Length: 445
Length: 112
Image (cartoon, rainbow over all chains, first blue to last red; front, side, top):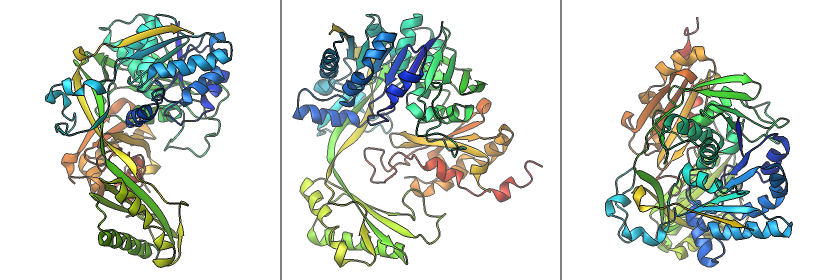
């Protein structure tokens, strides 16, 4: 027995054709997962729910379901997504609705209980300290979202009802992959080596095509990015994993492409923390067993901590960003003059800002500029943080002035005037698992 | 020649920390990379990005069987993805910055 799990989305907004491409090309698929939630997404979803109680989930997901549910149900492929965001029940209703229009009656399970925005004040101050810096949550913080990262076990519990679709709130991305493995193989909470292998399999495929040649910094020139195959983890009962991709798709699965993803967003590879297990892949060995098939060896696990990682976001002012473009010659000098101009005019107007950052795109925006010669053009990018939306609008209005009244050889990078964007401070914490009860609900459409 | 001629990698974020994973393209070059890419070397390359420039802001982890090195850069992302005013708020281009380093002198004679 081998369990085959594909991931067809690495973020909300990822390739909308990927789920169909996966399901059409992947034979013998058991599970199709999609990851929609970045850290700040939760705060954005809360704002949407505040404006409309039926929102607060990844609204792309129902249309993906609409596209693939009939074939998935026909072939017995279970769909899992963390598309529930801060409102899994509303997401379930939307999915049930699109299914009904097709005459389908899927069983839908939801996993929730991660959301504690309404009871943040009940937690000890010590549990709300920033997990990296140790700083307390500011006493006056206007907390928008608060979510614990659940692991694979609640997802496995949801699967025990044999649903067609599983919708979760905040779980670690890899829980969508680990959950099916716990369910299929009956892994217990103490089988740390197996759980660790499932966690790392999930870690490798959770970012979609980054495991199959996307963003590959090695020899990328020959990769067919247009039709890139999203990753599949083929996992055995002991957790042994092969990473592959659907036949007939683009991309590349080699120890090099898988290796880059293995190291993505990782700190200590001997202690990769998940809610169910701490994985050790420091001594991992990647083996090309066939074309586009890579086996992972030497992953082990140890017991998890008694805390969940959780993300809080609180309101923290606004940011405004705008760009103007200057041409050679002396593009950099003109851009520098534009930076000076905007700062002087903002100060004369009394616009309040806490931070002011300039980037001369083409010179030193991404790196430190030490590799550059004289650039052909420069994008002068300017961003501020301000506590006041009004000041943000006023700041944004300054850029048009450069069109006729600033340094020469200028053109606008983006048409129109930019707007202040609400900013949310990210505040990760470690909260006692005992404070949470993952909730699984199952409904028949 | 540049580091990119013998290695590849990927970078990303965790809060205000960036990580840069570097992998030897040919396993025979891994000892060279391991010797060259110390925490001090990486701290110097990213000096302009570190809130506290210096070797204390960089941790290195070695993955010997895959020929990989993982660097964690503390305080390297202008507060982190939701705070940063930079374009590259998640340090996604940091691996490219490390790999563009010239290594002609250091590499000379290594493979002879």
